[in-house]
Length: 309
Image (cartoon, rainbow, N blue to C red):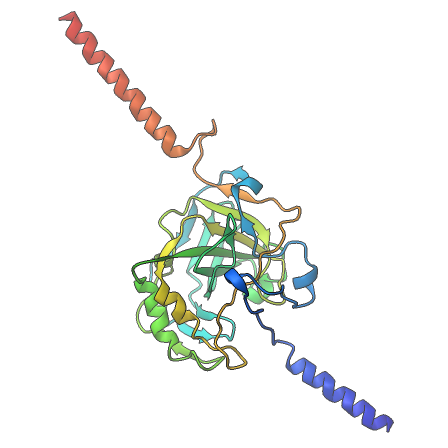
């Protein structure tokens, strides 16, 4: 009897271990709000620097950073493969020459992968966008993303928001056209149909963004991420957002949504970075004022010369 009990306990342990990587997103209720928060356990529930968060100027301090510098971002990815992870559509990068630095980051970071969330995980002033892209990088001081996840600020993620517009996004179409091949089978991957440059998935304004220290937004929610979320969004069509929802999860059901609920900021600093001058004026406003001032001087000189003659 004792041996039988031990055998059952061992069987339950093995079953639990086999399902250890299985987790799901709660079903959204009215207005896209989760019916209940995620219960993923561990640091996901107990951490103090969790992501995503609501990004708002009212909760932020103003910051100035050097420009972000992107190396080889304009080049097409080399034979990128698109994967159905069961939780998202992911595009993997194997070219270690695609990096970014500057922008207040403490080192140089290499691009590992890109994946999408529908709707957006971060919200701007409580507004959720149709889509959010995460470009995941690891610090080159570490051998891999897996190693970097173990260190505070070892990972840098760029968050790009997509608003719903009238026209489809051609670069998103390239990804979705490939995703149709793998949408029904978790773990399946396919070679991207066409060329894709990470640069084409970035907003034109990359000097205005929110910066904070946070976590991965999926289990085990490691608090190792420097987040940079751009304030300018990119257009995507409603039909394209709906196509993402056709992706199947590990249960065989359509992945209707894959965004985590907003987490508390707690005592963290949220920085709003943009182009500001030392007097606290907007950079564009300063330039306009300078032009007006110079114009007034030129007009005054011309008027004085006419009066003299």
